[in-house]
Image (cartoon, rainbow over all chains, first blue to last red; front, side, top):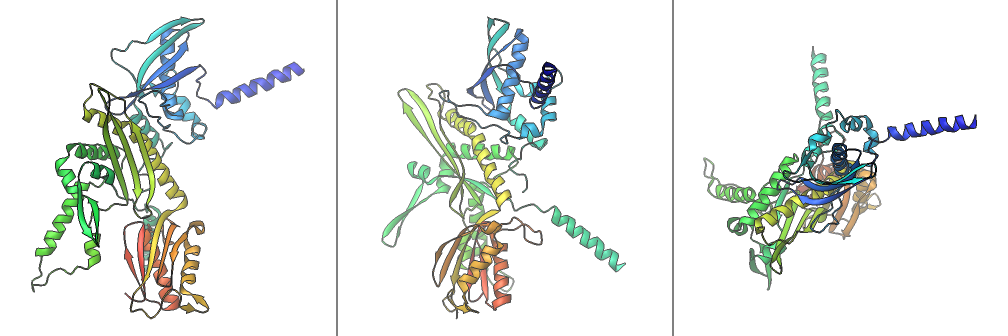
Length: 161
Length: 314
């Protein structure tokens, strides 16, 4: 009986936790790699996946997620720390349904805001349980910010005037 | 029928007030005093035995293509964010045109335009927020790099409301223009994020304004004149405390002939729902003083965030 109660409690707790995230449950790192001539962010992403294409999707999702919610650390020489587009820490939870759809693996539109760099080949390493990749991507942060303003998740500079 | 018309008009007015927007601050990019000084774009003149140096914006705009490029780039980046800027070049051209026009314009009877010294003083390149930009190209061995500072300053309170600064990557191959462009692009998002925080604060806690109170030299009263046992300075102080957002204000200076209030947080809208700035706020104080104590005052506006109240006459 005690075991059943424990399992029930655990399943409820895990379901609640899952509801509060957008499903990024892999380890990754996103580093600044500069800016493009029109000001978009270049980022170097390292992450893992069962297959190479899965790892590549993970890298793109991680890059967009960090630009939106975490900002980009500028500790690399020549880089400036960039703030997150969504600066309100409670915005993810407040708009969870929207962000779940946005980051949906099949129908999500996050992939429209991240590009491969022409001619850049990802470094692929076989690791236990899958592949680790290191790839440089471009995040279209202006388009991303405009989308967030349109969805009224963040305020634009001219809002209210 | 009259009732219906009255009702419709009232409804339209109410809807209009509900949709009222706060007064939008004007923003202008200007080169900083430091940049003007370092690059020789200054005018020096004698002033009471000493020498005063002021920036020569016109010469800088006519001869420095990097400055024109930086101003244009910042302008287009701000326009992309829905906040077009006033340009320094057009502001200077408008001042020259207005001055020239006023000199030659006459009425049919031959009268020329009446201008007081305040009109002439106000005719300068002004904005509610000044974006002051500084950059300098430095060398590290064979490599060039750019240091860049962008500050948004509220000229009424003198406070820096946003800023971004950085040092670019040293490069041997990139041209100076490319390095400057990279510095502008890299620092723009952080600058806008800080400016956004300033606007968020303005919407949450009210607009921060300043007011100078002065007394005409022919006035029969001053700020120490008593009304019902209270000095005029105290009466004004009480009114400001009552009418600022959460009673936020500070009295920076005060004497019997002069007082300066700054850090006054005023609501973005008047009690009637109209957008409010320093002038409309001080007009309410003038009305209060006239109606309650029969004191005549003059309100002299000085932009969105600063105003003068002259005591003792118009």
